[in-house]
Length: 261
Image 1 (cartoon, helix red, strand yellow):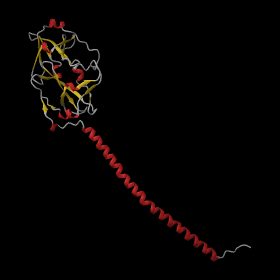
Image 2: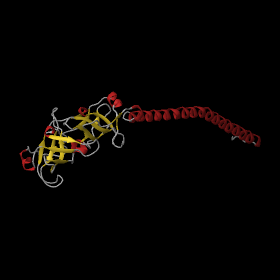
Image 3: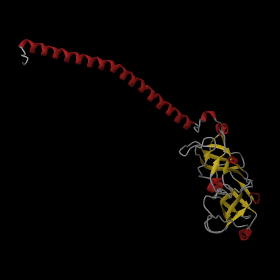
Image 4: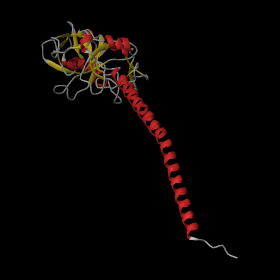
C-alpha cells in the first residue's frame, strides 16, 4: 500500500532543503575567505622580490659600464713636450731637399715589430705625395722641426735625383698594424675589462721614438687619454692580427687626459 504525502510533510521537506542550501553557501563562503589571505600574501611577497632582482641587475650593468668612465677631475693633463708631435701631423708633411725645395711627402710611419725603431715612409715623386714610389727613410737622416700641433718641417740631405737610392717599401695587405695610419682608428679591447677603445693618434718624437698612444676609452666617447705606446699589442706576428691594449685598471685610472691645442 503506497505512502500518502500530506501537505504538512511537503512543507517540512521544503524547509529542510532550504536549510541545507544555506548551509552549503555558508561553507563555501567560509572556504573562500580562508583562501583569500594566503593568495594576497603570496602576491605581495613576490612583487618586491622581482623588483629587487631587477634593481640588482641594473646596478650590475651600471657598474660594468662605469669601469671605463673617465673622471677628468681626478686626472692630470698631458700636453706635447718640445720635440714631440702627433703622428697624424707628421703624415702628409712635406719633405724638403738641401736647397729647400719640396722633393717628397711623408706617406706614413713604419712602426716595425719586435721593438725596432720607427722609420719614415716617403713618396719620392708626384704632386703632394700622390704617385711615385714608397721608400723608407730613417729619422736620423732627416731634421724634423716645428711647433706642437702644426705640420712639421722635414729637411733631408738627399737630392730628388738620389731618392731612388732609398729602399722601397710595399704594403701587401690592409690592416697592417705596423703602419701608423692603420693603427690609428683601430678599436682594440682593453685587457682588464674587454671593453673596446679607439686609437685616435700616436705621439712620436722628432728622433723617431714612439712614446704614447692617444685613445678614447669607448667607441662613442669624446674623452682622450694618453697611455704608453708599448701597451698596444698585436696578438699575431708580422703586424697582422687582433690588436689589444695590455693595460690594468690602475694604469688606466692614472692615465692623463690629453689636451691638444
